[in-house]
Structures are given as C-alpha cells and as structure tokens.
Amino acid sequence: MLHAGMTVARINFSHGEHATHAETVQMLREVARTEGKVLALLADLQGPKLRLGHVKAGGMQLALGDEIVLTPHPGQPAMIQLPHPDLIAAVSPGSRLVIGDGEVEFAVAEKQGDTLRCIVTVPGLLGSRKGVSAPGADLAISSITPKDRTDLGMVCELDFDYVALSFVRTAEDVIELRRLMKETGCDIPIIAKIEKSEAIAHLEEIRDVADGMMVARGDLGIDMPAQEVPLLQKRIISCCNEVGKPVITATQMLQSMVEHPRPTRAEASDVANAILDGTDAVMLSNETATGSYPVESVLMMKQIAENIEPAFPYDTWRNKRQSIAPNSASTTEAISAAACSVAEQVGARAIVATTTSGYSARQIARHRPPIAIMAVSPSAKTQRRLALVWGVDCLLVPTFLHTDEMLQVTMQALEPFNLHANDTVVITAGVPFGLSGKTNMIQVQSIDAEKGLSLADDI
Image (cartoon, rainbow, N blue to C red; front, side):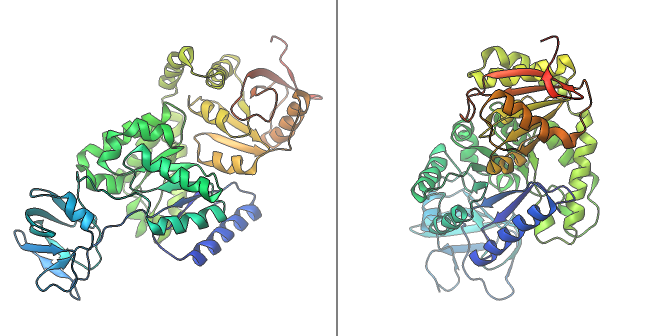
C-alpha cells in the first residue's frame, strides 16, 4: 500500500487491543523506514458508542408498523435493552432512532419514565449490539469516554502524528481533549470528525480550535438527511481551506472495492469531486481494513487523483489568493500568498518552504498553487505531519543556523528532484531560524550549474 500511494495510516481504536495496535504501529514505521517512505499515523478514538443490548439469537425480523419497547433495564420480557439513560432522556415522542447504518429505524411514539414505546418505520433484521443514534437529540454525554482516556495514554506513548476525535459537537470537545493531552504530557494535532448535526452548527468554532477536520460522511449521513451531505462536504472542506488546515474526506469512497477489483463509476466520480472541492486527503476504510483488494484500492485512488489534478481549478484558487492576500492576518500568511504569486510570475519549478512546525508549508498549500511545494525541515515529526497536507513533499534536512547554511542544505535536499541549470525556485524562511510560525523572508533563487542555488540576477 505504501508503494501504491498510501501516505497516512489510520489506526481505528474502535477495534483491536492495545498490544495489537502497538505491533501494527511498529510494523508500519519499520516498513516505511525500510522502503524510504514518509508515512503519518492517525489514531482514531472510538468516542461514545450507543448500542442496543442482547437480542435473541438470529435477530428479530421487524415489519413496518411493529411496536418495540426499549428500556435501560436488562432482562425485561417483551422489551429490548437500551442501556443508555442519557439517550432515553434526550428523546421525546416523534424522535427518530436509527439502528446501525440505517437498516432499521424507529419512531418514538410514547415515553413513560425511562421506557420508550417505538414504532418501526424502516423494517429489517434487528441484531444484538447494534449501534443506535438519535438524529437531532441533544445528548448530555462527553465526546471522550473512559475508554478514550485509556487509549489516549497509548496514543501519546506511541507518539502518533494525529489523533481524530469522534462525536465532536462543539469547540469545547476539542478543548477538553487538548487539556487531557497536556495533562498526559503530549502534544498531538487534533482532527475533529464532523459527524453530528450539532458540529455543523458550530463548524467555524470547532475549526478554530482543532488542527484539521474529517468529513465523516457515514455518521453524518445518518444524523442528517443524506441528500444534504454533498453540500455539507463542500462547506466543511471550504471551511478548512480558508485557514490552511488539512481536511480529510472519508467513508465509502470506493466501497465496492471491498469485494470487487474495480470501483463503480459513481465512486470514481465521488473521489474526483472531493479532490476538485479542495480536500487535502481522501480516505479508505473498509476497503483497506477488511476488503479483498487493499492494494488495488489505494492504487485506484492514487490514479484517480493523478488523473483529475491536471483539471484542478487553479485559476479559481489564484483569484481567491489575490482577494485574501491584502487582508492577511499575519506576516507568514502574507509571505505565503506572495510566494505563490511570485513563483507563477517567474515560472518557478518549485516553492520551497523552510519550516520547523510546518505552518508556512500549510499556508502555501492553502492557496493550491499549480507549482510543486517542497518543504524542508529538520523535524521528522513535521515531515510526517505534512504527509496529510495537499501538494506538499517534505524533505528532512540537518538543522541550519544562518542563511548560507539554509541554502546549502536546501540545495542538497533538492538534488534528487533533477533541477537543471537556470531553473528557478522561490524560497520562504523565517529569520532568525528555528522560531516556529515566524516566516518573514522570501527569495527567488536560480540554479547555478557549479554553485548550486544563487540569487536570481534580476532580484
């Protein structure tokens, strides 16, 4: 999968044991190191999972209009256990209860204390331990469960590159996770999974405190009408694009490849349209976790991306950049926008961002320039984290202390990319070096056949 194009591996803490995850992480890092590939690791916390209790062996075949009684108490005859008092408290007559991925649905007809009398509105087979969601209900539960707290300790111990938070509803959920990480003594970028209607209502606030977002279309399409998801996807992607934070589009992108060697045409279009929307990453789930064609799925996704990127609307993004640049909130943002414009004007082969934290590279990528973006960093952690960001290849270099040294290590790092004499690159950096988020310099450099990088004659 690495050779086929995988750049980020997601470890789903909803499944498996800690020992298994530790072995998987060790294996992934060893393979990436052996193959000379940059691979970021994303830990996906489970979050609160609301499930039914035990249903008779073989399940219950429900017909339209059947009556079902739900109670938190186990062992009640003619009732099905729903061991989540918070969920029962949050719903009322008329509320929807969606079972699993929507294969069965109930409407709450009556509520008596902690018992719900429901009518089957979508018939089907009801099995034990099926997930339950209540679209629109305001659940008074934390997005971080005791299991998540335990898992977080391992995530920090294994030094993941990103951690994804499930069941995000407000900015406070993200702030709570960051507070817990601080207590644990780790600092890992947080990806907020947008899968609840409440999160849509607080989208910008969540984005501002998170380090990125995931369009979790599966659960989002259960909590909200499925026909609204395409426009919500565009809104979430645009929301992250505005500030240069990475966004992942996920769920059922090539679902048919779980069982078949080729995707449907609709799935190929789905991946392509997410890329055209401006997503930083497209994610596979079952296709590579349990499917029969994991390598083929990764390769197909890569081929779709490579085929669609020449048609990417770079002109639209250029116009956006020109409207954003005069109102840039920081020097780094202004320099990043200027670097894209200068690179296009001088016909540069690449924009090179020297970066400690990766912030300047993300700000350049924010403008989606039609020119290669090369980040150079002395931080292996930054190199891995930038694997999630649109269009950025990050090269690991020795630490540099002054401009001449920066140019020297940059030239050495660029050698494998076959730059030719008189090719031009645009370089951004922060002076003095080593200060995160302080990009304040832009230079246009020409490739000299004998001396390497040198200032362009007309600058």
